[in-house]
Length: 411
Image (tube, rainbow, N blue to C red; front, side):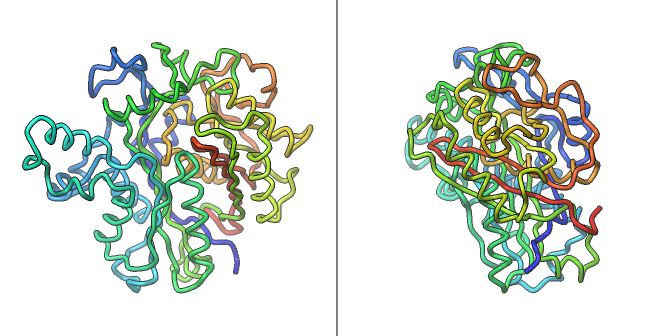
């Protein structure tokens, strides 16, 4: 079977709602990271985040569903609608059992859960709403998308923290390859900006405590001091090449290869040698039948911590030896979106292939020792692009890498 293609993308991000609005902001180096506004963050130590402030749920979701679901599911429903509209895909005209939904989640509906737990402890169990049992659950977004559009193909959810978005996309490819399904709505979104969620994240010790957005989240930089959390993500429409052609759809690119490994090192910290991350990259390249020298750009995981950055740089240098391609981390403008981050990076890679331009990394001005990479800074870089490698890691040692390739008859 020929590699499945991505025919539609939808984005909800801190620096833009809607794919082209986000892409324009990204190429212009406009960051969505700022002081948290939805609650007073001062006592939490970390005061910055990538908040989505241009999103009105009622423009995308009926009120009945808004009260039943969490913010991360609102993002997923909206991005799915955008992706289908972008692809010219009308689910009601498709056979029910030939369209699937596979998304990634990391923290689930934590804001909804915080509110209901507050009711439990403050008022009693009788004040906990019935929807708490489903709104927090990792599979809620997958379920709500499938219910809304009556999609009855193979559905699922991947929980692998920051690596989950790539795993969901590869699982979508495998689902199509097994047959019986033509199309998969896939990707990931996240909404981890709230008192409870932020408290959980602070326990890792990896969040930046800088008060100035320009000083926070500086991956590969000598002044790296942690990362900034963010919310949002992307949903992509993945189709078999044959089905896309039958609809006359114009693809962004192909999902060509994937690799996943586990550090088996520490419950929190990545392995310092980066060997398993390098192995994930090699697996992805081998499955895509792509030589290292054929990769035109790398979208980095970009941990933003000195140890994590050095491990990723070592992995890249091991895989590509002396010819590491340009490296970029546009997530420096939105923060680490956990399950939504890798899906957003994959969308950035596809648009980069489409437009022949590498989006920039912000806040990086002096590379740290051991991180001597060609990081794209100072603005977008025009280049002929055919193949991109997207790298993602998750807390607990998850490593993943995805190869996307420009479609032969794309946009």
